[in-house]
Length: 244
Image 1 (cartoon, one colour):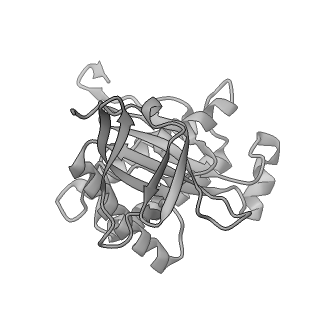
Image 2: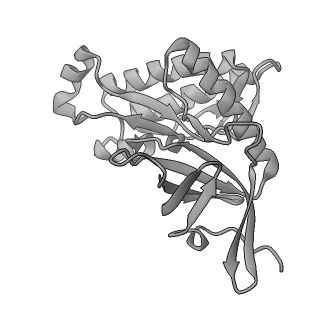
């Protein structure tokens, strides 16, 4: 038998076992060149306490190992500082938990990949949140300021953990809130300190914070993202007579 190409539709509706827990795979949350992410429901939770998770399947062992190790460091750092910017890693946890998993599909087909189970980020990706504020497609200033403040705090924690982001996108930033964030409530919520909480996903493309220039690039990337959130446009730079 030869391994089948990783595709989310091959996994949807299936039940998988990881460690001492079973998960039913409910829907696709996204896919890339070497990975798919599915929403999974834990079947072994106590009655009335069903929880859902983001379950990543990837064919790239190095990326899976990097994300596992990064999340362990980030979870440890945020626990010390009593923050919640990073998804909590739920599998693998112990040294006996294997990243590598195989699933028989029938008809002599099977999937072989590497699996991580993470806390499911709630709320909206900031790229989608921008669409709620036409025509400018920019966030109201109080909301942009609060997301920016939490992002900077998140950077401090990730740098303490020795990690910098390398390919951070607006879609990686999830804004979790139980409140309506429409413009008419914005100032009131801002004064109450209840605008929401930032959760940053995707920690497999990173660099060592100790290497020269990586922290500076991380801060520059924050500036580019914040420009988009606050002004609704991509920043442009002039080099000689050319704008880019």
